[in-house]
Every structure is written in structure tokens, then in C-alpha cells.
Image 1 (tube, rainbow, N blue to C red):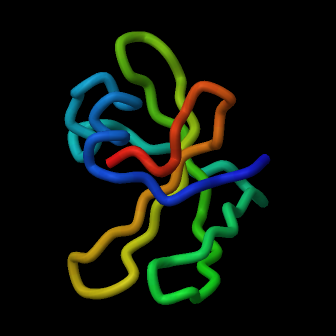
Image 2 (image 1 turned 135 degrees about the vertical axis):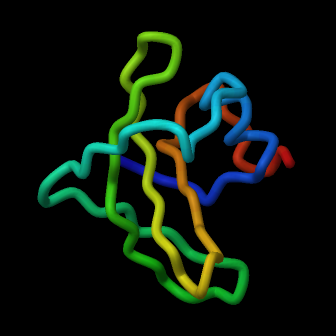
Length: 84
């Protein structure tokens, strides 16, 4: 699966404006998302599943610094990864 780091606007749409921090995250064992960050560094993020409006959605996320999180979403044909 191809992944891309997501902007706040993309995350809000994908998570249907629900609060990700209020959700129960389930780790997908053995799955990692490889993405390139803004500095050109490769990140390998754990993959999670959570439920939003009754739909289970995959996402990748990790805390890369103290209280600094990076989120990535699966790239779909209808998702503009350059949209902010």
C-alpha cells in the first residue's frame, strides 16, 4: 500500500471531523508505512485502525518528537496528496 504524509485538512476530511485522540486505536501487527518527511528523511510509521462514523479506517502515525506527531494516509485515486 502506498502512503503519504497528510495535512491537517486531509486528516479532518479522512477522519470525518471526529477527534482522533478520542478514538481507540488498534495496532495492525506487522504493518508499517514508509513515507518521506519534509526534510527528505524516510520514516517508518506503525499502521493503526480506528472507527469513524461506523467505518474502520487505516492510518499510520507516530510521535516523532515530544508531542509532535506525524500522520500518513493511504494514497487513494481520489486523494490529492498536494492539497493542504
